Amino acid sequence: MKNNLLINKIFRYIIVHPNNRQKQLLSLSKFFGWQLYKRITHHHLDIQLLQNVKLRCYPNSQSASAAIYCGLYDYDEMNFLLRYLREEDSFLDIGANIGIYTLLAASKIKSGTIYSFEALPTNYQRLEENINLNNLTQVKPLSIAIADSVGSVTISNNTKSDSTAFITTNTTDTTAESLQIPSSTLDNLLHTGNLNHLTLAKMDIEGAEILALKGATSLLQQQRPHVWILELLNGVNHGYRKHDIVKLLQDYGYGLYHYNADTNQLQSITLESQQSDNVFAISNSALDFVHSRLSQSPLSTPVPSFVGYNQQ
Image 1 (cartoon, rainbow, N blue to C red):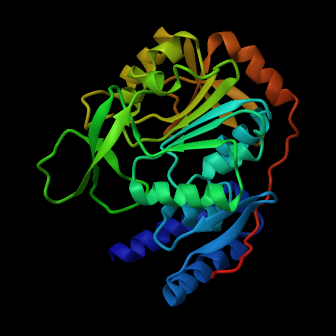
Image 2 (cartoon, one colour):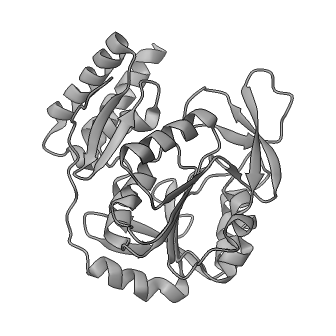
C-alpha cells in the first residue's frame, strides 16, 4: 500500500509538472525506463540536462531522478536562475547536493565564481563528479556544513535519502545515520572574496536556513547577494519558525517574492500568501536591478532531453 501511494504521488508529480506539458506520456516513459535501467544495471547514467550541461545520475539519487523525469524540476527557481545570472556574476549553492543548481549556474557564469557547499560525503563526491564531467573551472566546491559557527555539526539522515539529511542537536538518536561534519559560516568562508558580483544564492539545507543566515550577517548587511532562493520551513530541530527567518531577512532589508516562470514576473508575498516551500528573498535596494535583468531575458524555457552517454 505504501509503495502504491508513493508511485501514485510520483506519477502525479510527473503529469502535472510544467516542463511536461503536452508530453506526459513521454515523461512517464522516462520514469519506467529509468526504473528498469537502474534495476538491471545498478549503474549511473549520464544525461543532457541542457544543451551544454551534462548530469550524472545515480540510481539512489532523488535529485537525479527528478531531473530525468522533469528536467528543470524546480521550474520557477531554475528558470529564474537561467534568466537572471550573467557571466561575470558569482553564485552560492548552499546544500548543493549532486550539483544541479551549480551546473545550471555554470552554464551562465564564466568569469565569476560559483561556491558550492555540500555536507554529505556521498553527495559531495557526486558533486565533484558532475563538476569534472562538465570541465568546470569556475566552481569552488567545499565539503562542509554551513551553519552559525565554525567547528562541527551532527548531520542526521533518518530516511537515507540524498535530499533529506539535516543538522541536528540530538546526538543520541540511534535510529538515524549520524555523521560529524566540519562546519563554518558564510562570513568566515567569504570574508576575503570579492563580493561585488555576488548576486544570487540558493539555499536548501532542510530546516537549518536560519543557522546559515545568522552566520552571514556581514553579507546581509551589504545585501549580498541581492537574491536568496531558499526553502522556508519551520526549523523544528533548532527552535525557530518561519516568521523568525522572515523577520531576520526584513531586518536586513529583504522582502519576500514569488517568481512565475511562465510570465517572467515577480510578485510580493507574505507568509500567509506563500505558494510553495521555496521563496525568493530580494533586497529592497536591488529590486529595480533584478527587474531590469529579467526584462532583458527571453521568455523561454529550455527543454531538457534524456540522452545517455557511455556507462563505463
